[in-house]
Length: 336
Image (cartoon, rainbow, N blue to C red):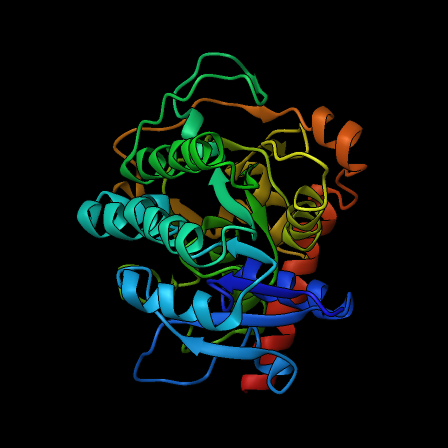
């Protein structure tokens, strides 16, 4: 019998890769989209006709309840969120409503209409915030230090509460940073790879950054803290871990990461070198892009996922960044 999977946030990076994976496994995939003034969703355009799309919003519990009642999913992947940590200081109330309370609305709708469904909650390494230890695992305490991370802590603990209180099969994927050519330009990885591609091709009308300004000005990219450290992996591989979590005999939470750290400075070097440029000639620090607080250097220990799920990262950091630069070059050439 064909299984049905419901994905909130299906048009995003993770949602689109997950939809591809599930359709390849024979699932009937239902995706939730927010209704807006445009109907073009490039990440999932190639899936039109292969998946079912429903308009919905995590701010509207009645709407979510209706969707779940009608599609009766076997698996629910809750990925929708205000997912940009840097934006959470500018929009803390929106972040709380969408990322925190939106998860609660989805959990309650699932409990009422599809209590049999297996539920995946997209948690973030930002829940660990300012922990002093360098390597984080499933037992690391949550010390979130930005509005986004705090909202994710609420969502994660609420998911655990529904699991323990109502016996729901609910799992939290504590995913460290994961990137791809489908990443939004609001994220530093994509800003850097797109900027390198624009400068290499001599693009005169680059995309806009999160402040509404041209991404590059005078062949230069403005960034924040170049010494910020992250554990970056490949999003396509991380959604496979999501699926594996819901196939387990018992629900549990897993850290998904690479257990390797890299700085933004190193990211710049690799991205610009991919187009034979010296990043130091094209990157400047702009205080407007500095975070009020910074998370400590931390790697994610994925050993539990490797042992229980048979999952491990395959794509190196350098290969990932080069892949993203090449994809941005192709995208800009098509646009021209």
